[in-house]
Image 1 (cartoon, rainbow, N blue to C red):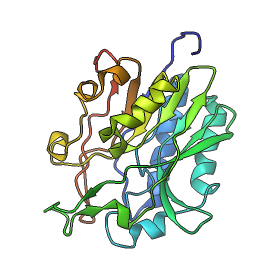
Image 2: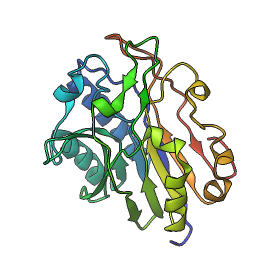
Image 3: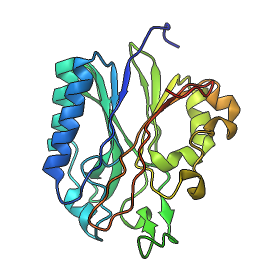
Image 4: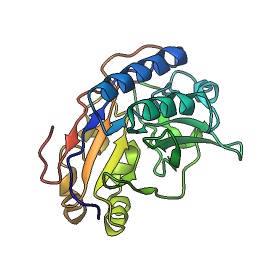
Length: 245
């Protein structure tokens, strides 16, 4: 475990539109610049911040790109300019031809430290507002490995959105010595509890894990278009003692 020191974490929140990937990346750049000028050590962009891929059956295919690629280059430039860690997820087109929901981690020098591919995909076939529901497993392939990063700030792990439903994942991080979990998300309306997500009460699910780990999430705002589901705002950082910030 690293020596305790103050760490400034910024959580960016904005609504990504499938038909405006350049605009989404411009918004991400804006918030990265804002966070950097405020002295942030770590910045968490939303899940699928370059476009959520829900507007059509092919939208995720159009949004996907390789790593490295233009979105990673943008993230790396911001990380290097402000000497900060940057993460957030987007659709990755893997070398194997599959598409993943991937959160790369960029270091303060702009170098790629690693990539976490979402493990627990979000399948909700009974979404009445988005026939025939949401089946992430039909769009992307699951990842198979956790990612733990030893840094000069702390030892942190990465999860994405629906991963939070599975405390075993965070227990594994805790046993590996993680002090912080970064969790880019794009939670949806209706209220999160109706989808089975332990958000504000996450500590109740696995108290031995959450006593040790702090969770920081980035979520999108309350606007929608292109017949996509409504994402909920209210991004937060949660202390193991369950104090919201």
